[in-house]
Length: 287
Image (cartoon, rainbow, N blue to C red; front, top):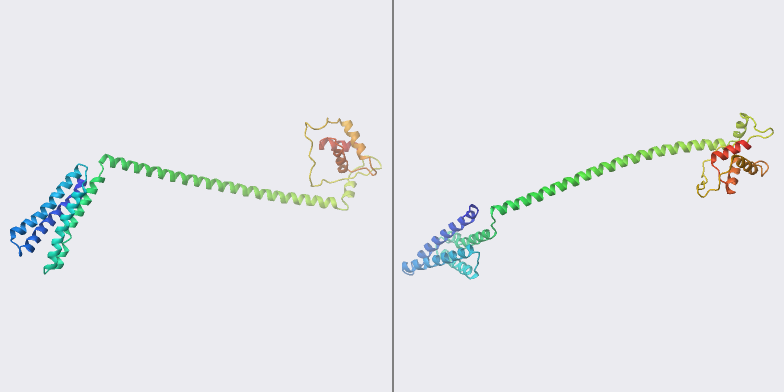
């Protein structure tokens, strides 16, 4: 018998022994006054003997891995009979409370044997218990590693989001300052362009390119820029002489002569193509 089984079988054996002795004593005291003591002894031994026999047979079946409901029912019947004798004696005795307090011992002994049988049915070997503990420990380890991985990933993602947010905020602040500065510069340029004395002031500090013609100054305008045609779909590039002649013809197509912006607009509207640098250079040469 293993040490673990002893934990349940010893209380059951002790309770059974006490219950048998108590039942025999009660039968002798209670029936001894009404019948000869030998008859009372036979009745007491019969109850205890039947209970012990059914218990021994039930334990034999349990050792073989079998179970009989009939044997179990007979064992409970003997236990109930013993309990009935104890209760009947307690009700007729003077110290009824004390006898009623121990009248449950036979039922308690049967209950302990039931617990012991359930313990045996679910008992496992040391190797099986070690394997179960290993599996449980492995599951706990995996769960702990998974939790640690999730926490690390969450912390890393939080750090990355914080860095991205901070960088985005810095970029937004730089863009806002740049836009503010650029807007101020273009506002100043627009005020200068719209000023009444701007053209006269610029003319006074420059020399005339063509005698009798006053140069017309145009400051840049902040606005949309026309899309330059793609190289593969653009017409053949003009030579400098052709570009100069075309620019001069468009410029002098009206009187007074067109400004650079008007000339450039008509130049591109006519389907001609030239870079802004070449177009301005041609304008300066013919103007």
